[in-house]
Length: 211
Image 1 (cartoon, rainbow, N blue to C red):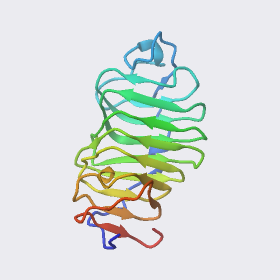
Image 2 (cartoon, rainbow, N blue to C red; image 1 turned 90 degrees about the horizontal axis):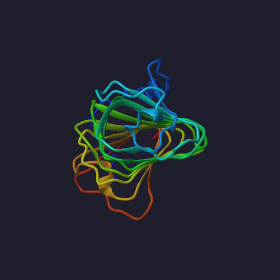
Image 3 (cartoon, one colour; image 1 turned 180 degrees about the vertical axis):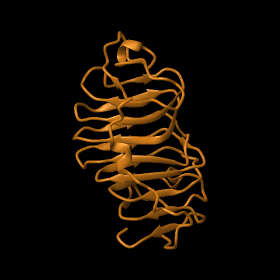
Image 4 (spheres, rainbow, N blue to C red; image 1 turned 45 degrees about the vertical axis):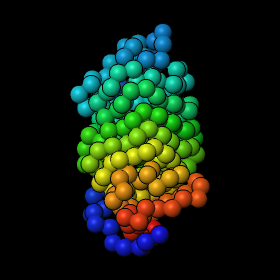
């Protein structure tokens, strides 16, 4: 891996903000007759599709939500009660990012579109993983942190770079790290390859003290 200074300023990544519980959050309760996102009985109150909704997932009812229509949200937060598997249509995620706590894992197969300059993924605890297997696109930065493992496995096209400030970011291919010229900064966390791979010649890996 190449070592160099990362061209982005990483100091503004403030991960703890994304783990906070929003007073306006809508909670997945799974009381509907199917797993569909648009079934209102699956929610404590139906989330808006305007980039403002903060969505929480917990409990054990219907832990396989299907996003059956493209949706624009602010954040996704997963709790401590069950493994959750999301699938279906594209999700645009604004500045609230994705977070997980507890001992269960989260798998998101949807394509994710960055709706803000940064998509923060915070796996707060080491007891479970976050797996993002859909394509991540947009002009922003993918910023991972926490104490757990975050697996990023899609053929991604985001162009703002990748920052790792805690935990482990696990990949299986060079294209998991975004566009070919999208650089990586390791600033306190770990970048791990799940299999043998060769990083692209145009991708720079920066390692700060503690990385």
